[in-house]
Length: 83
Image (cartoon, rainbow, N blue to C red):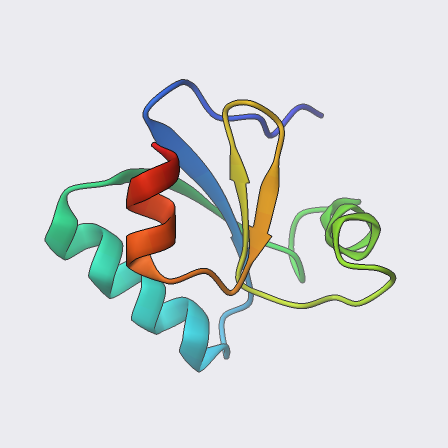
């Protein structure tokens, strides 16, 4: 499954219990930044994908950009600057 977002948006890998994920989602909503949230505990294969992006760790939030690059626990400023 391809989780690469369209230009101007991001895919955010998260879990339901992650406080950092909730904070980033709130900031993205406030800034009007489009994102698709993918819960790595629910969507098959995504925990492994996040591990591959983070040196074997299931660190969330992990954000995937349209160019295929990623960022782990990024600030809103970083996300906005990459869009």
